[in-house]
Length: 209
Image (tube, rainbow, N blue to C red):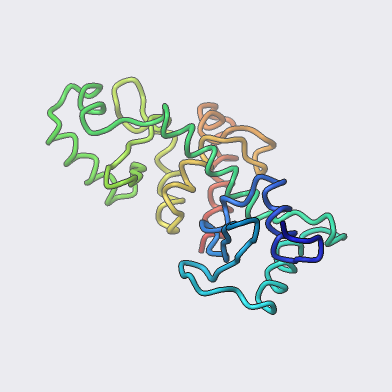
């Protein structure tokens, strides 16, 4: 087993304790494996071993958040873990394919696909790509399968700023700090609160730019 002075092992143990080891690759950071009780760190996307200097830099980088490095938390990895959990929930029950939207609209699949892609080119609908498939998040649709009118300006603001579709989906369907913990797409149903949601979307779009 690695001794207590082994920085690589201690860093790996810390990340595993926090439940964040699986987020390293998604963050473009070095990753590691364990073999015969030895932790081996490697450069992102390669098998090249991490130098002692790079490992020390990584340790400082991950512990930089907070006043006490000994108890710091890698916020970027926490955010990635949270987003991964939200993605899983949305993929489980939060979208339709072309056929599902076509059924709601009472139109053919081909006509629905054409209409959705035309609307997407105008940034009037949120389409998300996942494993080669196109997903239509259901939060944005009314009972007839049309994009909710009150969300059109919000979607246009986010998509025209280049906000990643997954990030837009997550932001619109989870409690937002800019809205006092309210869920944006739900708050937008209230005409009096819609301008607040639109302003929050503008703020998010500006950060994306």
